[in-house]
Length: 426
Image (cartoon, rainbow, N blue to C red; front, side, top):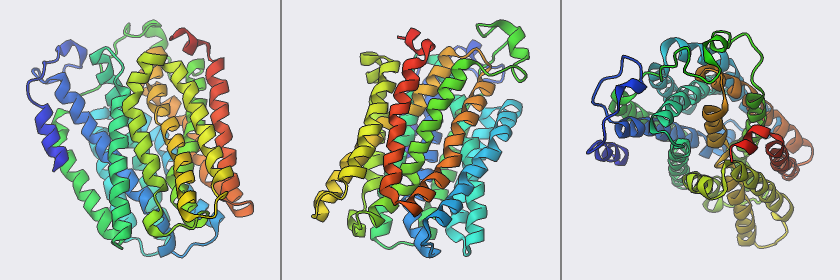
């Protein structure tokens, strides 16, 4: 209901868009604000769906009575496998059908997959539904970000962080709802059914304001039409490879927090359910960081924001892994680990929106292809994270897994410092 009222409120008194920015299928008189906030509601729906799953991971693990960490890592591994399968599929479908159609298809599939996870009665069924969850996750990511970059070009300024901030806001709300559901002992089935219905409602209300993709004709990119024709056959631009590597590290960090933060509080700290707030505080700071990102850009520049983010990720994981069990008091453990998780959340908040924004600014590759290349490289992080973290956890414990993941923050700093194009963007 809040989302519906918000959508109705922003629809008033907006400035109409000049139709030359969009394809001929654009309906005249639609305001850029209405288009922007309609796209934002889909980011909200995606964030709500994701965090609803992430907040109940420990409960799903207990329902299926999985105690072997590496085996659970294999189960979670099916999500990135689905995302991997979706990469070429997303590039083709978004290019063929357009992001407007694919946003609607993918978000409904995402919500339906969440509902299916809630009704899984066997570990094999769970694996199949997690695989589907991963497919629609990536389809949703690429189609939504294609919409967002097109809208960013219409505005003529960086607004990508606000879209991802909306995702984080909804994810934070989803984490809070999940926490309440856990404390109230509500089964995942009822929780996931509620979220799936909300996603359907959001889609029905906002779908009419989605737009066809930005019309990139022959000479619309800096390198002219000739390179665009050969986009699928030439080597990826160096900037895409570099940003993709940053994204790879960032997605490993995200996976460590999204999939394992609840388990960390449950197994390492052994906190009671009422104090298992790791995922919640992480999402709160991730949300706050994304809404502050645009201000940080103006104050520091995008490159310096990425450098600071890498440092926060390193310090945050270091705090939890080295100091997380240094105190005997349960309250002190919860506070220290929460601080570490908050630092990681603040650091990771700007990573994805910043690299997507850099793609829109710096890449000469057609947008759909550029995002597919970026996602393909970054995705390797999601693919290896469950097995990496699960394997280290099984042998050494999750504290050492988190310590290793923290070193990726330093890796992000080194990569950013070495990318010449990012220095030129200051």
